[in-house]
Structures are given as structure tokens and as C-alpha cells.
Length: 411
Image 1 (cartoon, rainbow, N blue to C red):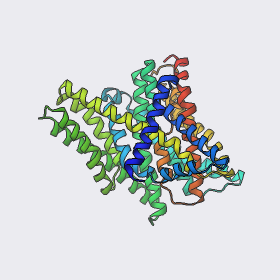
Image 2: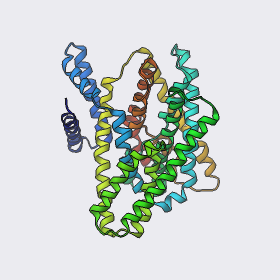
Image 3: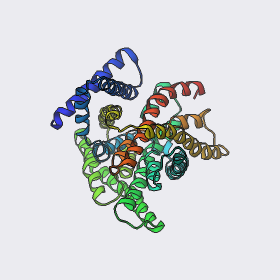
Image 4: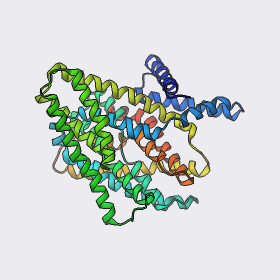
């Protein structure tokens, strides 16, 4: 089946679920899309159990033709990170810089290590051994957060701007940091690199620091290109050039494209809009990227729900999946509560901020994409099952209930 046909089928399913949700259910759209896809996947599996395997098999064949990992990491991610960073107000970002830095950098590193250690020691109690390198990879891929459902709730309920900036800023930067950590561990483990602290640190610094510097450079270049132009179409094309050509070049330079997109987006979203772009051009640019973000998130969350059809499931995977959900929530509580309560000594936050940050730390498609990139084998199947469980729980349970939590805390 060709790409156009597959894309048409995926889009048709997304539109159908979105329409039903808008007319009858009224859930946050990305959550509704995921739940709808999970229901479709579950029904197909159930039908297959009664001997009618043809439809399930056909859908599974289509899904296996979709390179989910490549589509997200080498395509969707650059668009999503750039679109999200355009919204970040640099004034609020500066005010919350230490919270975001601690949560996104230190928190992601600590989360990776704590998840890895707990998984490594707890799973063998249930007769499920997992190599420590795979535990580290799972810790890295499950640490980044996805703010889309939470930010939509904040907008709807009028939550404080400071809290929204912390949530979105943490997510944008910890996506980049988590990918750098994951790729560093992956290259050391599977690409023949010698595993030493020096090699690990150098590889991490090259990816992270290189990505940030590169992002600043391309953001500045784009700003200079936009400065003499008063044409929103050309400005949009320049922004598209950043998330395509510049992101691709980052891969060849072996630096972090995701971090580069975040830095470039923040630069253009603030300095570019403030000093070079007319108000109408700013509105056109923001509307364009908001639409792109909505379309990509719709497709992404649909694919997340449908991935249930291609995940191998057995007793050990179910046990590990059920264990991983509370473990990830526990680690999230630790890496948020400790630094935020320390910050409370000298700063004031809206009531319930810590609880909302903990429960609003949803996991999304990036975690699944990274899990799918692991080498084939039983340990990959185990990690993929655990990842899917955490992501599905986060989107469905946390995504739905975070609205009630925000209301209860009266932010």
C-alpha cells in the first residue's frame, strides 16, 4: 500500500474520531483521539480472538508500513518543538529559568538514573530480568513530558501564565535533553563506542551544547533574513526552512536538532516578532504554526492509540507494564517535589503548583518512538510494552483528570 493511501486512511480515522468527540463527548481533542484509537485497536483485537483475524491483520500490516520512529524523530518532532517554542514569552522564561533548568536538565538526568535503578532491581523479583543498559534506555525515553493536553486545560481554565511557562518550558527542553541522553547511551551501547565517563560526557556535551549554539545561530540568521521583508508568506517559508533543512543538517553535524529547534523558535518568537515583523505577519505566522501543531498532534496521538495492535504482549510484559506506571509516577513526584519545595523558600507559587506539575507530567509519542528504535528482541518487546502502558495511562487517566485537579487547586 502506498504512502498516500496510508496517510488518507489515518487522516480519515482521525477526522471521524474528532468529529464524534466534538459533537457528543467534548474531551480535549488529543485525549479523545487517543482513546478512540485505543477503542478501535481493542475492538479489532477482540474480533480477532473470535476467529475474524482478517481485518486486524490488514490494519496491522498498514501500521507496520508506517515508520513511526522516523516520522516522529526525523519529521514531526522538529515541527512540534519549533511551534511550541514560538509561544514561549522570553520575559516569563527568564523569570522561571531556574525552575525550568532544574526540572528539564537535572530532573531528566536524575529521572533516567532512578527509573533505571528501580526497574533493574524490582523486575527480577517477579522473574523478569532486564539488562541495566536497557533499564537506562527506558529511564531516558520515559523521562520527557508532553504538555499539549495540560496547556490546553490551562488555557481553558485561565491558569497562571507562570505555571504554563514552567510546564511548557520544561517539556520543550526535556525533550531535547532526553533525546541527547538516550542517543548517548544508545551509541555507547550498540555502536561500538567504549563506555567511559569521559566518552559519555564528551558525547553528551557535543550533542547538547552544540545543539543550543547551533539553534542560536540559525535563529539569528532567520531573524536577519526576516528583518528586511514585509511578506508573511516569505517569513513562513523561512520558518519552514529552519524545521526542515536546518534540522536535517543538525543530524549530519551530530548535534541535537531538537534543542536547536527550541532555541531557534524562542529567538524568532521573541526577538523576531518584537523587532522585525509587522503585527499582521506575526498573526499569520502564529496561526500557521498553531494549525501545523494541531494537525501533527492529531495524527501523532492517533498513531499512539493504534500502536496497541503491533505491540507483543505476554504475562511478563503485562506485569512489567503495571509496575512501571506507579514507578514512573513516583520518580516524577521526587524530581518535582524536592526542587520546587526548595524554591518555595524564596519564591511564591500559585497554590497546588507542585501537584499540578507532578500529575501534569504526561508522557507522549516521543517515548514510544524512542522505544521503537531499539534493536529487535525480547528486551525491546518488554520496554515497548512498558512504555506503551505509561504513555496510555498518562494520556487517558492523567490527561482527563488533570482538569479536575486544576479546578480543585483553584489556580
